[in-house]
Length: 113
Image (cartoon, rainbow, N blue to C red; front, side, top):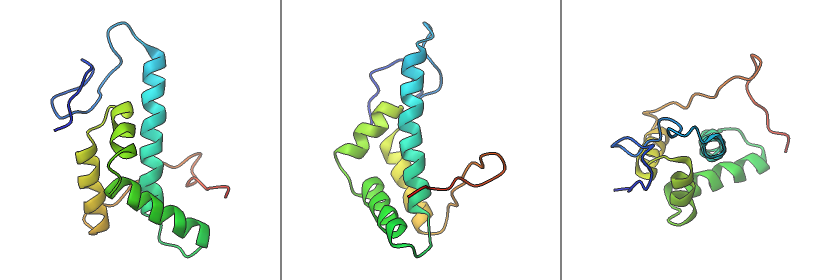
């Protein structure tokens, strides 16, 4: 089980709020790492045929489902339990879970590359 070293976590390993001192830098850093994980989910769920995006999808799947070094570290930085993320990713792979992509200005985000 993922062990937290910070009091800002609940019992499941999820970050829930900035600490009592209001450390906004730590909050922004967590948001950045959460965005990395979110983008990996978006990439993992892509089902088109563009070669560059197929590579992104395959790399995102490898990163979330099989990486044993970088992925757990990214989750730790984000304040998220990596095993819960992997469980959600496996459910997505099995068609049990759909990934919601946040619209930006009413449009789905587009990658520039």
